[in-house]
Image (cartoon, rainbow, N blue to C red):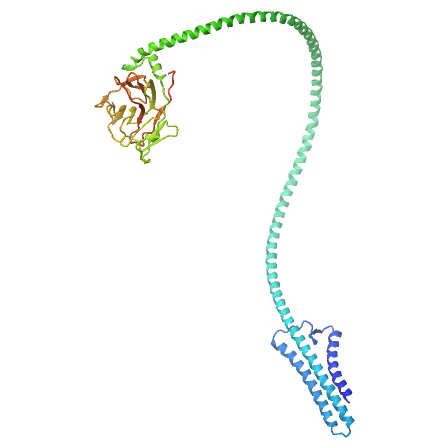
Length: 482
């Protein structure tokens, strides 16, 4: 009994699963979806699809329970039959039936889990398909756009090709014309070649004539080579004679050198005499340095030979002055330099780096056409914090101020000049107590301070005044030959 009922139950479940499996495998229009037969391409699109699968599963489950109840009814009907053997068979059948039900339930749960997994996979596949469909639409849109653009480009290329074809046809026509011209030129060339052959024959005849002339020249050259050898022989004999003459000249030169040596010694003696005479003459020149009018040429050279290399000292410059790097130019700039007791405070001036305490010294200042300046010498003891430009306060200056030329005597002395100087020469003879000023352009004397007994250092000094439009005062180089 229990074996029969168990086989009925198992066969029912297996038959249902096998029929679905065979149906899916044998019919090509069907495919598996979680042990259930579905149509190919079936894609659950919503919750209703999943519910239909759930209903089918529940039908199978309920069918199994109905079979179980039938079996239980049969068992209960048999329980009233006499005999312990039947009861034992019924007990065995119940035990086997319950185990079969549990096994089928376990298999059913496994199938449900597999179905849920397949459903999730199908949902993912549906989402991927939707994404691919969207990409396909975008690709179709792009492709249509690209096709339109390529069609436009194709039309342009066709137009260009038509243009090129027309150009090629024109070129073919031109080529035909040129071929005709080439044939005509070839015809003319053949006639020209005949004329050139005639000319070539003439040139060959001329060449033969030149070759004969060259052979004559070669003969003449051979004769000249023979004459050259004869001259060389004669020259060798002449060289021997010249060597003898050279030895005589060397002897004469030695005699001349001894004479020159004597003359050099005599020159040194004469130079010493000249120096002595110059020393004597200097006293006479000094008398002419302060004479009015044009300075005599020899006196002017003598004055300028005392030229000094004057370099301005920026430490002594007024705070509003700017000095060039080489110390040869000074300009009123308006800027304020750091204050210092070495600077002139009320006088827009600057003094040189080197002082003089003996001898004669001379320098030149290019003043140009400016309307205000001062040039000359200042004593070492001059008070730089005060503005008293006089000889008594230590200023020995030639001044142009308010279009009036004057010198810093006490009181100042105004001057009347025939021609304003562009370049002023400043001369000091410390030992004789004299400071003089000259117009370099006209070589004329302007004024001289005389009769001083100097006992302290004198510094070259210039004043550019407070004008930024007049340009710089420039210490000019002195030529000793002018």
